[in-house]
Length: 218
Image 1: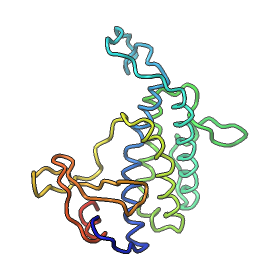
Image 2: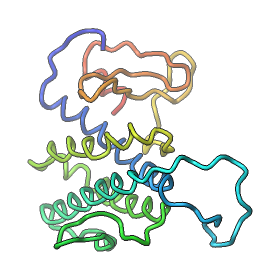
Image 3: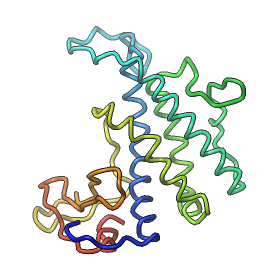
Image 4: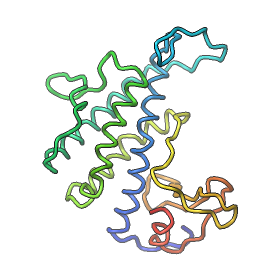
């Protein structure tokens, strides 16, 4: 945004919700990648068959990735449980697949593989996104939207090589290069600090209001 324009509450929530939805979409890949830094593959592939040791240099070992991803998963479980109660719908069956201590969710169970952890998060994310509109219209919606960013912000910064999942919706077509790659880029943690840019050619779409931003990324 090149102009300073007052951001009303409704538009601010719409921008924050767009960012939170994207964050949730990227979360399964992020969790799987981060845990792979701390849990060795033991030389096997997903089919369980042994493979020759890779000639590529191993990823740097990150013991903190276990604590970080455990915390994110526990908080996501808590939100899913909360929304299940508020919306009066059943939570996903996998909500019980969690390590607890003194009755409180702590994270993944010890046997969870990186891929398995990513799949568990994907189930939670899918459950939430199916009920996205209901969540946003609930009085607790704004708190949840803000907390999604808080849950995963540190992880995206610490584990930047995490693969990003394709977007749920087709990106808008760039008026310069023609690629369908136009989306939102947040420059900081502030929801208003956003620009609309083509991922293919880096062209920044001129926008003078936040409603124009939403028209491009909504």
